[in-house]
Image 1: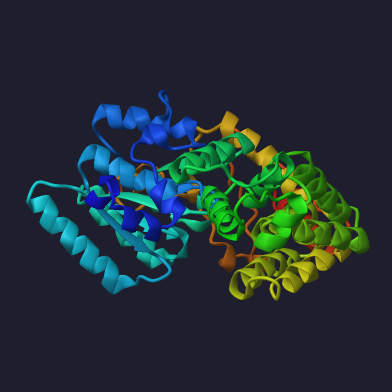
Image 2: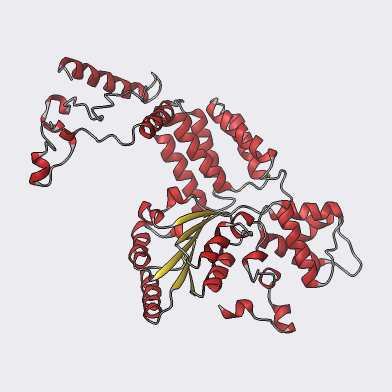
Length: 435
């Protein structure tokens, strides 16, 4: 990693992409992530303490996750290793771990940067745990997906999640100014075209610098591009709205309300508006998955399956082929029976759980693996449901101090009509058996 901080020859400067030449050489030079790398940032404080813990960098592409990992290694004198979960398997991990163990025996720890860490399966993610625990590596994983959904709980419990933000217009303009200083010339764009280029970059610093290079290559001497010429030269359309501003939130809100309101035509219209605006389709896929849980739930259990399958289908096919899968899911969700009963029950249960987090479960439902625990009454009086009439014992499973609670109240709609019949049947049995 030493070449990250070296001066390069003029020939090398020409050969290297602009984004690589402008790669920050210290955390203070990182743009757009001041909450992490600024004077009072989390990572700045971590370096000052002289100790790094394992971390997960979560954020969109082009926000500096790889660069920051390299800088952390350099600032703490850790050996830097980088792998990608897309191209690596178990054999590659074993080699990296062995090399890290050898370095550790020599007195040097390794910072292992894993790009797209969410691509590793559960077993592969578990393989990091021993080398994290014994200090062989400091793991820094990078992901564009929500770690809560994509990473093992065991891995998350050993790593701190740090969120990287998309570049805003100010930080992208700062990058362009640095690019102009590096090149020794201004971008040949009028004011409106420059604003359009910033919007085209869509919060991605690497994309902004790549677009700037394209503009410099295309411009003839003395030529200045307006917005129309810029779009023609770079062959990329400016987003219809800024994803970080009101347009983004207004349209995703309209899409969600149309799905909730069972209007498939309006839902499809807003979905296509967002496709046309250049919205990240995987973001839309994630929102559809959320709608399936929040607004449909168990009224149609297939809704979540179809929404998740559509997200995975887009991830597999890409654009534009995968967009049809998201459209299919959108129409299905809007056409499905609606229920927020699970959503409401979850919120109520979460509130009660937070208020009563110290209560122990009743002893009769706890296992008694030792004689001592058996003597304390663990498992005493437990009724095995499969041995009871109708495979239902009717026992109270709540902590004794809390008593039985009711959170889930399924409506008489869709599949939840059948669930209500079951719950009513069990409630009647419980009453008959005096439980």
